[in-house]
Length: 116
Image (cartoon, rainbow, N blue to C red):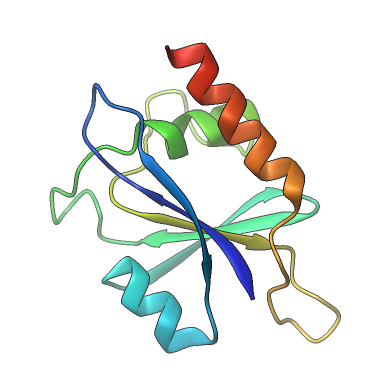
């Protein structure tokens, strides 16, 4: 399925954003490099991050953190995302992820424009 991968590039840089095809649990783990922590971004989108990103001291993901704030996901004002984030469409009736909605990419592009 179509997903958006946001790769952390450090605290002062916009993250690398790319559309990727992800087929199944193992590919999701491979993209993130660790245990999965699920996040609800909106009614039509969800995401996964490495659950131990902070413990592993992975790079701060500025774009993913700003996206969570922009979409009002409930991320505490003092919290942040470390490492890579993979975004999918909300799960279907069988619990399987779906293609990421196009509007999420538009939100990410707006974050990059605001940051420059």
